[in-house]
Length: 112
Image 1: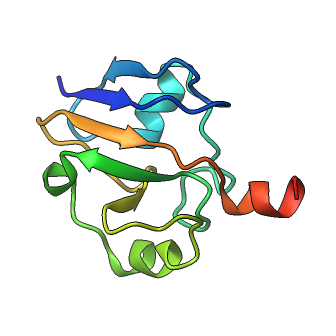
Image 2: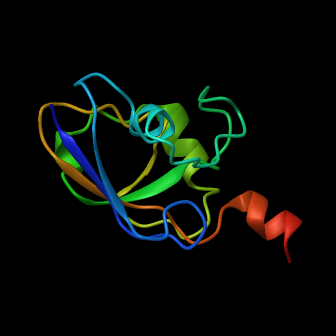
């Protein structure tokens, strides 16, 4: 099973963490199944950007991005070339390293 290495995030994963998940699982599902409470305001239906992650390693191994995800990512805070919506980023057999951005669109609206 592939390993997802989550880099430290002050709120969701302060120490960083490594979790495993079966191929075909989304990164978001894997994190939630392992107690990492990443935001997912639309309940993983590809309708928001709160589960945005930056894939630091293994980006090319993930399932292809569809047009809906590409359009939504344009609204994500801290967008980078290897950004994905974790609810749509489907694991293959390869390990990945992800970083949860410090803020999401919800943080910007609710906490500033």
